[in-house]
Amino acid sequence: MKNELLFLRELIKLNLASAMEYRVSFISQIVGMFINNGIYFVFWLIFFDKFGAVRGYEIGDIYLLFGIVALGYGLAYMFAANTGPNLAYLIAQGRLDYYLVLPRRLLPHVIFSRMSVSTIGDVTFGLMAYLFTGRFHPIDIMLFLITAVLAGLVLVGFSIINGSLAFFLGNAQQLSQQANGAIVTFALYPHTLFTGWTRLFLFTVIPAGFVGGVPVEVVTGRNPLLLLGLVLVVIAIWSLATAVFYFGLRRYESGSAINVNV
Image 1 (spheres, rainbow, N blue to C red):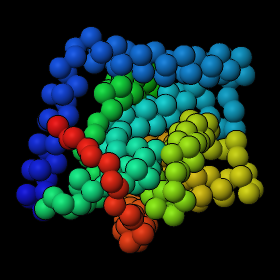
Image 2: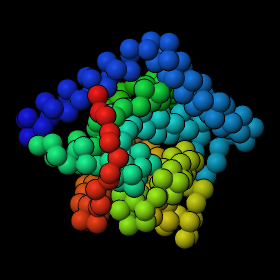
Image 3: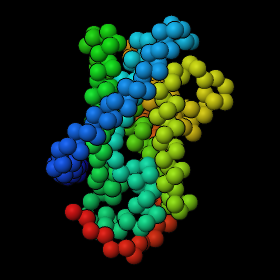
Image 4: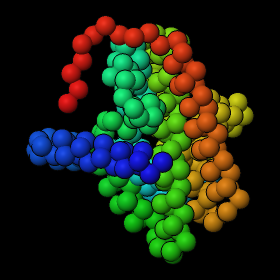
């Protein structure tokens, strides 16, 4: 385990060094993502300025929601960007061959071998959004950081699952991309807006509720049992993701493309 962690650390260092080789592109991607998040957030500022509150959510809760989701998303794909549509592409194109011949655990090596520079903008936005919540008690700050990490783990686990569908469906890039977009989009809405079958859908098939709504309730209610439940959900999603990936790997067909990996 120690060797694997050291290996992952070196992967992250190399990816970061490679991204920073082009400084202008590096900075512009970060700034661009930050602005993109800000534009989307302005909608909620205008909405709550006009209506005040929506089903128990006030503007402070929206700051917290965006802070958790943005930070979780940023941490997830800053380090594990080879999930979702990227994973589906590698599988469909037979490009797992490179990883299969190396003496490392396959799944961690694949997902952590690529980072997304622009997600640093998400991390920055998430931290700044939290500053507007007014929750500066050490317990609240600790719960915010913990739930953001757990939200990120949910996102990565879900992305592994939908990316692994390429083992069974062939070219599943578009489906995976749509699934990843859906979970983030729905996570940024107050979960109290959804009821009935829609609510069930957002806590099962597309587990957006565990990325946004549940983490917000953990922080606002300082609820240790709900936090434990969220941890168990993360374990369940990662167990399912691992099982789906390795089960699908049995169906994998080696590619004939010649790849150069630097």
